[in-house]
Amino acid sequence: MVNALQNPRGDLALAPFGRPAASAVEWLISSSPVPYQVAVETMETRAAAIATGNAPEMVWLLEHPALYTSGTSANAADLLDPRFPVFATGRGGQFTYHGPGQRVVYLMLDLKRRRPDVRAYVANLEQLAIQTLAAFNVRGERREDRVGVWVSRPEKGAEHEDKIAAIGVRLKRWVTLHGISINVEPDLTHFSGIVPCGVEDKRFGVTSLVDLGLPVTMHDVDVALKTSFADIFS
Image 1: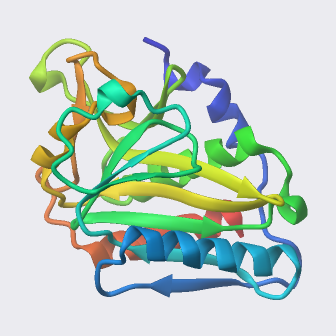
Image 2: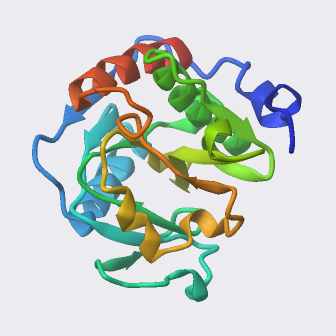
C-alpha cells in the first residue's frame, strides 16, 4: 500500500491554487434534494458564463435524491443492482452513488485564471476533503492507486480501509464541473448496488462520519468546508 506521504498528488496539493485578485466566489446551498439532470444543466450554464467572464465562480452545496452516476471510465459490469436511476455523466471516474445524507460539493472554478493544471486541481480537491474531515478529528488519506479520500479501519482487519469522500471532475473551457462528495449520514446499503469507483477488493469499503460514531450535521460539514476552501482555494 502506498504511503500518503509519498504520494505525488500530496505534493501537488502543496502548491497555491488561490483565486485571481479582486474576484469573489459565490456560495449556494440547496435546502432540498436537487434532481441530477437539473444540477448538471445548472452547472453547465454557470460554467459557460464563468468562461466568458459574465458570472463569478461558484461553489454549490447540495444533496441528490438516491441515484447512481457512471463516469467516463465506468464498467457496465460494476452496476450490480440498478435499484435507483442511473445517469451517464461526462466526469471522470466510474460508478458512484449519491443520495440523502451525502454532502455533494460542485465547484465551478476558472482554472485558466487560477492554475491550468488538472492533476494539481484534483489533488487540491482531495485536500479540501481531508481538511474538512480533520475538523472532526477524522484522518482522511490519499492513495496513489485509488482516487478519493480513505480512512483506516483496523478494527475490520489488516489493511482494511473505507472510502469517505469521492471525487469526479470535468472541465469545459478550463472551468471545472462536478467536484467531491462527503458521506455524512447516507444509507450505506445503497452503495451495494454498484462496485464503488470500480474497487472490488473486499478490504476496501465505504463509510460515513456518522458510521464512524460522529454525530455530525450537514451544517457542521458546511462550516468546515467553507473554512477549508478559504485555506486552499482563496
